[in-house]
Length: 486
Image (cartoon, rainbow, N blue to C red; front, side):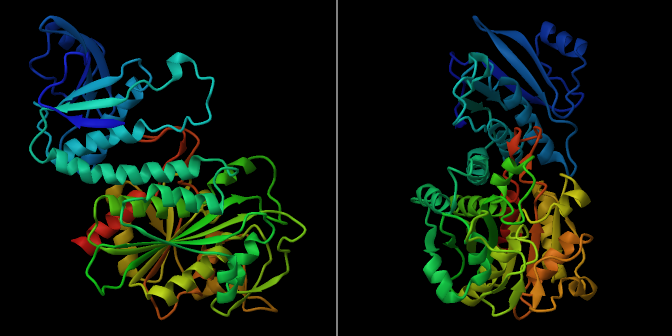
């Protein structure tokens, strides 16, 4: 979606929109437009859209009013995003190519106007790369939004917000692509191409390098696949030289069959998004670089494909992690924690980060607990947990904290190795986090985000269509903004 700013919309733009607060219809509406809005019970509530026609000079324009709800309150920016998203939903396939957004009498601040534009852009994203037989009325037509009457500073505010939107869109792209297109090597190459000119430094560890480092846990997951596993390392050093970085670690299982512990066929196609944690890290790094964040950040993505094969890892196998700890693999479908544990060890030894946050579509149990409304948060540090909860609330990527305790730790004890990779059925998300905690060294502040219920949506949301949501990018960006840059 192209968004431009102009003193006035060109005469060719015959679809125009205005943002309306609840119970405050603009005074300059034509009588027909005002009466039509009232007759349609349009009150400016969040997400409401009313469309009519109004004479402007010699032209009759199509005018849309988008409701932003009542001014003020904690939900103000989210409501404005929904107003912009409602416009995108209504006009994306309308046949109109351009929308003129008139903010001259809206009273919106620069930040508030940027929120409207973010909603417009994010809700207009759709992955149509493989849809070859769409009917004309189903095809995207809206290409540009021309903003007029914005307050000073709006363009600068939008530049920052646009960088975050670009990161979300990149995450959605990675998650939406099928597994025959996005696999470990192509994930790396997609990132290389997207990061050109951004200042992000890229390094990749191949299987021989990981084997030399002793990453038996990560390599074990991918040994049944014809696709080689990779460890992708992304660096953005925009902060003070010498400051320890914050580290983001993402689970990147580009397809998860379950391995020898094969998943049921029904719904297995969804497992293309089992790399949603790595996708969120990749998108967050793009967002931070795009807005030139004044922070040192390292992103690490453990990229594997979990396949059943004559060479695949078996239930009962014992692998040795990079940390030296041994793991009895009870279930090969509990593979994400095996990928993450070696990635966590590597990033600590290589960078000694000040804080570590891992993101993973780790357990179905978290969906049973939280549905699709919150991601699950586990942490060894109350301050870090509070910072993440705050960033989640402010960004809309909401999290909910779960416990960690020695009592749960006992559930993954193994009779022949240092630990098992799964515990009993109950507390499955907690025992997965307990497993990962064993790989955190020197009490480094660490948080594990189980986002299995959040990276993919079976129905449209406020600012996303059905499919990939881009969850996690805003959360990480907001965390960096609030705790490092401010």
